[in-house]
Amino acid sequence: GRMEGCLHTAVAQSQFVLHYQPQFVLAGEEFHGVEALIRWQHPELGMVPPGSFIPLAEETGIIEIIGEWAIREACRQMRTWLDEGIDVRCIAVNLSPRQFRRGHLLDIVCSALDESGLEGERLELEITENALMENPENASAVLAELREMGVRIAIDDFGSGYSSLSYLKQFPLDTLKIDRSFISPLPEDGDMAAIVEAIVEMATKLRLTVVAEGVENSTQSSYLRHIGCTVAQGYHYSKPLAADLLPKSVRQVL
Ligand code: G
Ligand code: G
Ligand code: MN
Ligand code: NA
Image 1 (cartoon, rainbow, N blue to C red):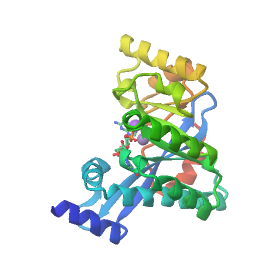
Image 2: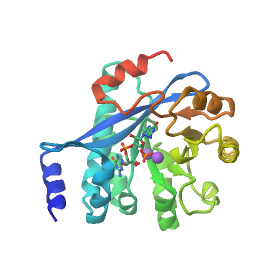
Image 3: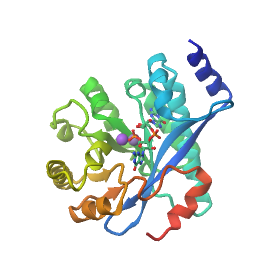
């Protein structure tokens, strides 16, 4: 199709760019890290959001090329920030299920860390529970090897998938990211508040970092701090930023 051809051109002409959304530790109101979010700078259409092209990229397999670029670019950018004396502590990169399925992933991560001279602990990979449960045996093996490299693993959109909770015990995980759809009704929706409080308590007992996504106001951030949620991300703090705007955000006193 036409759009598919455009995606190939986009890869060839380096039309992709990463933006970075800051994450903050709720207890100390200090910087925690960033999530890298891909954007397509189309020569005519301008900035195309991922929702408009990631699904097709997944279907056609081009996501494997784009996703590899995203991992390398995120590591390269982290190296640049560190060399400039800006301690962007940790960078999270989204993985598509398709990337996760391929044995190739470990080589890509290993060489991206090598080329940028980053410790594995600086990199977090975000994966959905559905992608993990597609093939639990493969997932276990891949996660074990990533853990060997020190790379952190986050469950993205936690709570929105179709899996049981038993996988939380089965896999070496570091972070749960509570889906935005759980956060936006807070704190007025008492039933949703009960669910979020239970997730935070469970994550704490499992010694997992818990990130609330889509925090949009100070009522939500106060509430999340009060119930012991570790980290928050959302428009209340910052939208995703171009790389050159990040240093200001890291130094920001909330
Ligand atoms: O930035 P935005 O909120 O529009 O992102 C929408 C979705 O696109 C996010 O849920 C995210 O998971 C996905 N996405 C963003 N960047 C990447 C990427 O580099 N790789 C993959 N596979 N998905 C991404
Ligand atoms: O990986 P994931 O699908 O969770 O990507 C996060 C998406 O959510 C990105 O597209 C980002 O632009 C968007 N986003 C980040 N913060 C907020 C927020 O506070 N509110 C809303 N509505 N969207 C957000
Ligand atoms: Mn994500
Ligand atoms: Na998410």
